[in-house]
Image 1: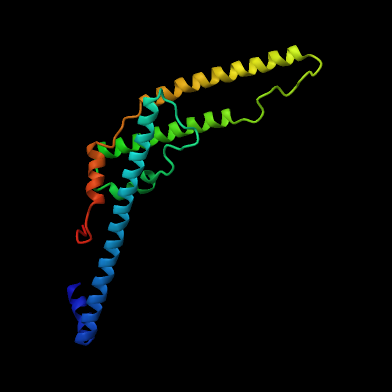
Image 2 (image 1 turned 180 degrees about the vertical axis):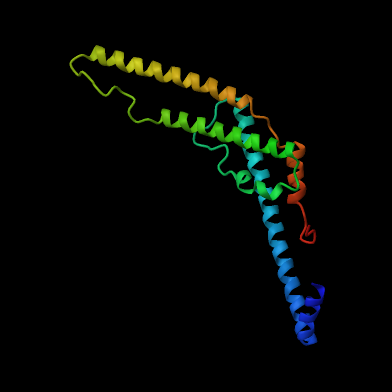
Length: 190
């Protein structure tokens, strides 16, 4: 095989061989740099997402698990899109820790979204109204308000249970390993 490569380069003049080697080396370097930059950017984004989600969870825990229904805790999910980039750098436990955090927070977001949709329903009064019987109307409205309050109390309890099960990971070895990756300099190719 080496003989074939050697013969290939002998068929060119000296300058063509040197130029081919230089161009090939530059292309390889740019390819490796692009992959490394992508990995660094993904690590930075994942760290930011974890920090942001933990801040919102911590704030909600401090005020009785009251979440701002307009805010998503995990607006993007870069971990599941980029997990393949970190297989060589993270151990199984680290990958499991981060994956579990993302899954739990995504579930919490679904619950918050469901509660938000429930609260924002436009039709909160009975569909069949008997205008001739105001007392019946008042009873129906009170019944619906009581159901709504009960549902909100139950959802608040559920939010608390789910939130308490989320382990905060920002200061764990798994995220520390991502920090090391995100802080690599341009000359640290591998």
